[in-house]
Image 1 (tube, rainbow, N blue to C red):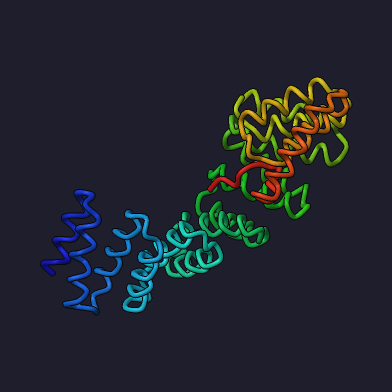
Image 2 (cartoon, rainbow, N blue to C red; image 1 turned 90 degrees about the vertical axis):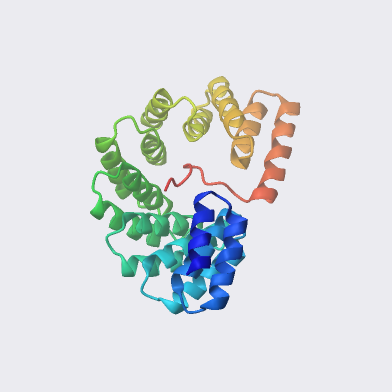
Length: 282
């Protein structure tokens, strides 16, 4: 216990490397105290040693499988090490043990979204908004993942629910705009994307989708303007360069079009295809 308490004191001073040494000695002297391994996992996580943190939490779970916080922190370090499937399973086990913690369901939904397991993401965020009905971000994410499943009506309903809670939330307007464009209402789509930009001039998704919609309306100069804004905000997104190349091509700007085609191709193979509707905010 002396080494364990010394580790806690050092961790409170953010001396995590020294804390690890104390926790390891405590664990050597008493390998059956789950709290030591939990705190060891925290210290390793603060040092960015995700694999060591995961091993520590797994040992803590082995000793105390009913402590939901072990699963929560294990999930976080699975995320940090980009093991998203394992993270989902850890968060799910934590939620089974503590079903009143909204953040666990948010973590499940967020990481299911990363894995494109959209129906599971919707289910998790639905649990979250049951626990906190005024959680605008949760309703937005339900709308986002409903859209990805082509459930456009449900996507709009969830987005409108988010806006009823927070009228100054830009991202739900992006989903509404995309649904309107999908249904052929290009003027309605333009209005929704413009509203998102009014709220947040740095909303990349709104600029990019507004540019794409102008492209469909053959308003090429406006399309170029909006797509260039989007590129400045998020230069690493391949599909924006793709659409900008099309817009330049329609203006007869062959060299500019070729440059954006090249960037789009490079980014596509480097990063994979980006989702057009923005980040799934936790």
